Image 1 (tube, rainbow, N blue to C red):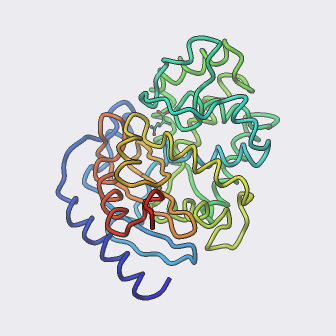
Image 2 (spheres, rainbow, N blue to C red):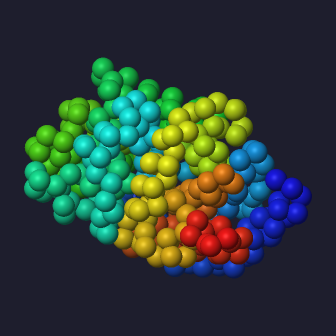
Length: 313
Ligand code: GLN
């Protein structure tokens, strides 16, 4: 990017940071004890351009649990392994308009898990990856995420234990999905690997490199590696656009106009195709499970810089 563009991005990030850093609405994820205990005041914003430039403000080197912000990357791995039709046939791509952990819509065999951005579809995606056993399934995901991030990511062991001890709704979901024969692997294996993927530690900067790889047509702008085939990037982004914030996805599309995904660890990754990724990190969540400051800050930055995909130009 040119110096003037870089300065405009930095200015928009600074303004959003200052505007929202005092906002105390929302609370940390209460249903996972290790996340409930996170420092609620952390706040960071970072942009990484498709030429690998990093523009940031605040807590962008603080590790946090990736949680559902991992879902687009597991979707990408499934698409890479099995092609675009597997998602249409075995998961579905329709927006749910439901909370992330909803059981509604999967109780009848006639309905698919609905969408890879909600838990039912994301758990199904984990199960559909072809892998010989639990360890191979986890390594596939872990190695894939490392390639998106351009560096080895670690697991937050305390979060992993906490998630495994408190995931009653996800157990219910996985059992229902298995009963209806949507899963490609046993329930326990699937849930354990899903819990691991949710407990991966990322900093805002690392998550932004992952997003920038999607923004850069599947090529990691830092390592130069083609992580996802060019012709599978738009499938991932379309699904993010439709359901990245669950029952707040419409508001986000209206205000920001970008494919993005949130996680209950407080991270949000947004993709501006051909330009950059933006990440907001702040652990206080709306009732829908989306970072309050993160969502508002990225909406403001998108508006300020005119990043919405739906702008007439
Ligand atoms: N993976 C976590 C869960 O299933 C996180 C969900 C989320 O981030 N919305 O509860």
